[in-house]
Image (cartoon, rainbow, N blue to C red; front, top):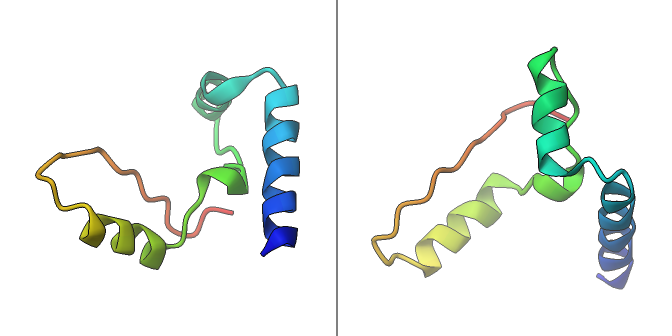
Amino acid sequence: MEILADDRTKQLRAFDDTKAGVKGLVDAAVGGVVDIPNIFIRPPDEVAEDLEVSKTGLQVLSLIFMGWR
């Protein structure tokens, strides 16, 4: 797992170094399809597990982009 954590850290640094932020992704998507960095993609089973653990009645908008990579 340490390799995965190290890879995630590298991806986060690379994204941060662009200085574009999430707004930059949104602005880029206005002109067409943009690749979403893997740091923002979670497997559906992981998301479902989190939802089961924290059933608090809190509603949060969740966008699922199936097939985007």
